[in-house]
Image (tube, rainbow, N blue to C red; front, side, top):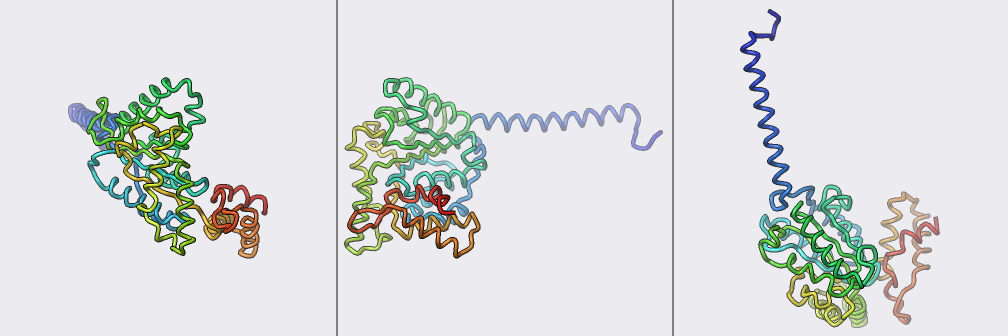
Length: 324
């Protein structure tokens, strides 16, 4: 008899045993897949790297000490809690180009394995997704079903709402049941979700307070959330054109973090330019020439002090190409 081949009965037992092992493995895989179809039991592609995020923010985010402090503290407390009482709800406020979208994309990159390409990251824009005011009832129904469906698929979903100050008032009220401390909404556990709102609302107030601090010779790092939050909240609540208007989100204190982005000064814009150029590998002499050219082409305000960049670092990347 050839080596390794036993009697027919032994071979049959070996084959049946192999089938049993394969069936058990398949069953275990199916159970895992089934559990991941119910968002409360799996983290999908949620792979938080908070240390990497903290390092990247410290190295690349210019002039935003409050953002680094608030975002990192809030994220750590939320991610390290195995059973959070409610979703993490953050609202970013500030002038254009101060880093709201930049921080959001960086945050997503370090929270999800596939970053913005993750099927569990959902980005909403008023211009793209909710353009017509007369269709707001349809938008409300669609948004509610989209949130509900995706939280059912994965409880570790992230929802990013851009330009909230341009969203139709009344639309975001449908989010209210998903943002509070209830355990289950519409049969879905949603407490591990993250909601981020981006808005220019409050930007003028933040700019004025930062200017007042500068005129009083206060270091900008001395500014704390308590110095800015009341003015930002008032700018939101008193504006009937803002997406939060009568939504209950602010009134019911559903925002965990209200994050102010300060206006950027000349040395902050310089930092942004140098970061962009570092990726291009330019020689130091050529780098300084480009930095100065970009700064010379940047508008600053107020007219007398010429202190803050009118568009932050928003156009830095496009301006650099003009001088290379």
